[in-house]
Length: 417
Ligand code: 5CA
Ligand code: ZN
Figure 1 (spheres, helix red, strand yellow):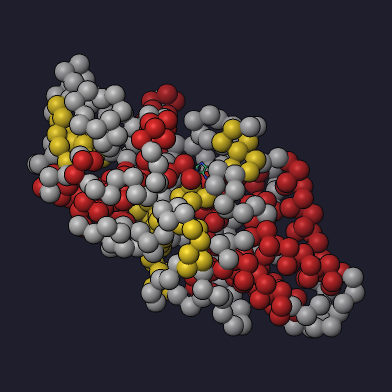
Figure 2 (spheres, rainbow, N blue to C red):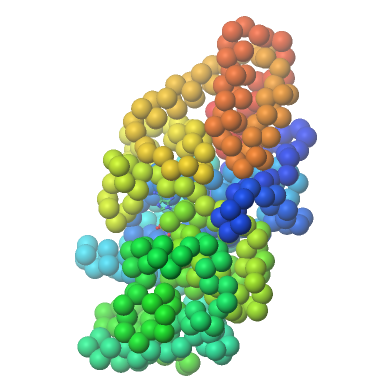
């Protein structure tokens, strides 16, 4: 499916330091250590409601990852999916009396607009589940052929046919991405789309790979699997392997995806490829909250990017709200954060409008060093603040500095002034 327009990324003299990021699997900050082309897969939206600040934080974080990798001299192959068939989408469409395809199309369009406004770099491949059905079916079939999956008859009350589940007992890597205990897994599995109590499952955490068709649900025909639709995790396994191959450099998403989603995507990929490394780095944006809870479509405690934009908020102020927080720590949105971001934007604009400003070479180096050090955006912002303060205090020594800072903000932080 089409993504959104790529913002122009200006050149900045020199190049960035090698990127280091926290890897959830190893629990440490490590160099990304990619080849000439870094391969990045980021879990995309389930399009049943509009983009909120939590989603925006996730996509801005991986936008910064791509910018930093490019600045360090890599080409980047970037893939993002769209979960355009899944329970939450079908449930919302049914609740609102809408066609699920129409709901998905509307929300994906709005997401594209929000990403464009926030100057988020688009993926090279933006792939919906519906359009990737052949690859997903091939993955489920492959897991059955390798003895890593089994069939379970649909309960008589629900229909006929057979669902297909992954057999975790046949996947020795299970648990290695999250490092969680079974107790920790149990605490979230059902809330995050799992069906631990489905009768007949070999292990309560075995994830659904293929759901045989039920009355009123969309389905796709397959000679081996029968009519049905994919479970959630296998879409990302199949799309990532098909578009990027195994051993990708970064698998990304919000921290709510560590388990089960990234755990399951990885074990499924490993069962298919026979390899043990689906991704070399698992990178997770911490949760953005609002009114004391994780911001989420299901809870409805949302601050939407589109609402802020409709209220006339500068999208660059929204971006600065996000950048003011490290991606590693949970935080809560308040209106005061937006007020502070707007004030910072105004101050930066003022500093950039002078004919000569404080010399900025060390500022550029500091922004680069901060980003390379596990995307330390608060430190990067502080470096720009310090430059703006020096300039506004009258240190007008370098006519090239305003242009250099403007290009640095644009290219590395995605902030266009
Ligand atoms: N379609 C799946 C991934 S394959 C999905 O999780 N969709 S989503 O629409 O629920 O979330 C989209 C992305 O935003 C995911 O990476 C998710 O981890 C992230 N996300 C969701 N809520 C928040 C939040 N409150 N803070 C930060 N990131 C969030
Ligand atoms: Zn995913």
